[in-house]
Amino acid sequence: MFKNIWTSLRLSRKLVQILFFAFALVLLFSAQRGRPLFPWADVFFRFDPLAGLAGMIGWGLYDFLGGVYAKRIGPQRSLFWSQLAGLASALILAIVFSARLAVPSQVAPLLPLAAVLYSAGYLFFFRGLEIGNVSIVAATMNLWAVFTMLFAFIFLGQRLTTTQSIGVLLILSGVTLAAADWGVVRHKGFRLSSGVKEAVLGAFFFGVFWNISEVTSEAIGWVSTTLLVKIGIVLFLLLFSVLAKRDLTISQVTTKTKTMVVIMGIVEAAAVAAVNYGLTIGDAILITPIASALSIVTITLAIVFLKERVTRLQAFGMIVAVAGIVVTAF
Image (cartoon, rainbow, N blue to C red):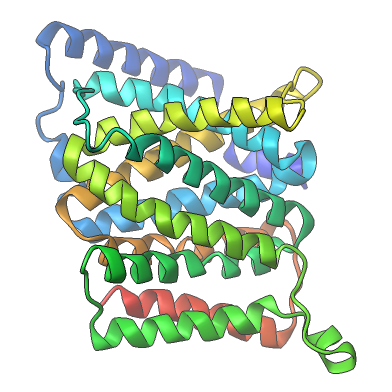
């Protein structure tokens, strides 16, 4: 299984060399010019729905790989090393776009808070992926869009349309159907599937995080927010590993696994950067529902590569939850 995944996603050595050479040229010319090499770069995410779509694809792939490697090397290791790779990508992004790291005093406390919330969200989520069915846990994580919209409604004064409200109800209904272990319910009463409780907690933390991220992105820019939060995430995970006495070393891990974890981090950093940019030109109440359709990508990959099985009722719940995500985008 892992060999098939690796074969499907790996890059040739020549292509990697070309990419690194291209990055070197970009950095060189950007440093000489003192500004971004590509003045048209902002056009790429001109529309906030497109930023949400980029987040959907990037996070969908990241979450699928996170589920695979959380089971293989543990959630803390896969999260830490992928985030470290993401930090390296964010540094390159900051250099290319000549990011300014001046942070107003009223925004500064929000950055470490955002880092802790994001780390907690993924620690719970990866733990859920480790012990549960990837498809079911991914469907449950759709709740992060509901939490994000709820907090945006309460604290930021953003409002839902009637259609978006219907979408929220569909998400809640779909997640309920997908998350329950209905085989046990018939005999022993209601019981959640393994990993669902962890996914709900992760969704809650993500819901708070994205509202804070919108505030910081509008205040200091999407590149600076991406970079500074990544730094905070890596530092928090290091501190957490020390306090919890968790071993983060991967010296005994295969080269293929290390490479895939690095790719995970790069993909996730790109998704975060895209959504952060979208938040500077749009509202969280629109962008996050689109991005949270990432479960479409995650579930599809889990079914294709992991051959996961779910009951018909759970499958119906996944479809309803994903439909709700689509509806909230309108």
